[in-house]
Image 1 (cartoon, rainbow, N blue to C red):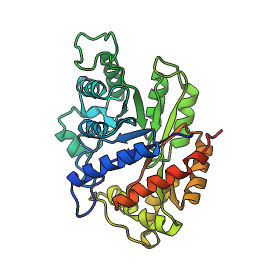
Image 2 (image 1 turned 180 degrees about the vertical axis):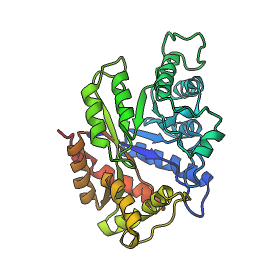
Image 3 (image 1 turned 90 degrees about the horizontal axis):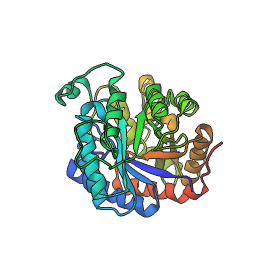
Image 4 (image 1 turned 45 degrees about the vertical axis):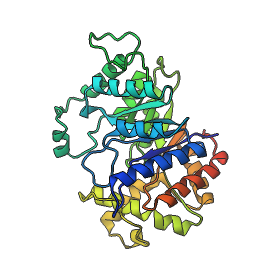
Amino acid sequence: MFPLSVLDLSPVTEGSDAAQSFRNTLDLAQNAERLGYSRYWLAEHHGMPGIASAATSILISHVAAGTHSIRVGAGGIMLPNHSPLVIAEQFGTLQALYPGRIDLGLGRAPGSDQATAHALRRNLSSDADEFPRDVVELMDYMSDEPRQRVRAVPGQGAKVPVWILGSSLFGAQLAAMLGLPFAFASHFAPAQMMQAIDIYRSTFKASAQLASPYVMLGYGVFAAPTDAEAQDLATSMQQAFVNLRTGRPGKLPPPRPGYYGNAGPQERAVLDTVMSCYAIGSPQTVLEKTQAFIDLTGADELMVPTQMFDHALRVRSYELLAQVQPKLRKGG
């Protein structure tokens, strides 16, 4: 069966708070496990009123403690915000608590604006070599016999699977060079998706972790009994995305039927780009669009974000996607 996974930002909806978001996250993870999803990943973002997953490692532990078999991980940890040693210790701890279930996706973006990045107390170097060095250092800490004098305790020998995340060609090149699985954020930055996939696959070098290329793509799904209802439910995400891109981030708003049709040219341009990697509609529509995307990209796995205002309808969307999953086939 074609593997599908869940990407969760623990959205904070208008009129709600982080505590409710965390309850929703655990409930969604338990449902994802019941429905047969492969992974449940949480993403590090900072200073955003509508995203509650800033303390990503803590939230991963919360989800892993409340589930039994589904893999739980970071999609991702923004490594420039952290010492590699600290992340090795955190994920070594998670691996000790939940052995064989933890994934570590690493990104080089700060997951915030520049002011917030400064507040995270990291040197905001523009040196393009720093992220690859940090990745290699982190992986060494988690190896059986680290080359470094300092030891990650816990962490040494944890060998948590590492993924490289990206929304440009840089991540594709790094993942290929290190022989790591590659997750591309096509659900919010699709412009270079096909080129990144091609670079990754054509330059991949096998490693101890991975023998052949493995591509996971972000692909948003809003499923409902009818196309019209799904399109209405997706307007919460559309509003939030436009607000973010125009410098007005906020909590996830309720749906606004007709939002796209009434949007101005600037807003439509923003949405037209990102919505190319979304399936919005009835189960049959979702099946057809998702299969077409898999055929186009040859993806090995899809990581599905669904930023929906109503939690129960969000769970239903993942249920409807799971119902068509057996019909999905690996592309050529």
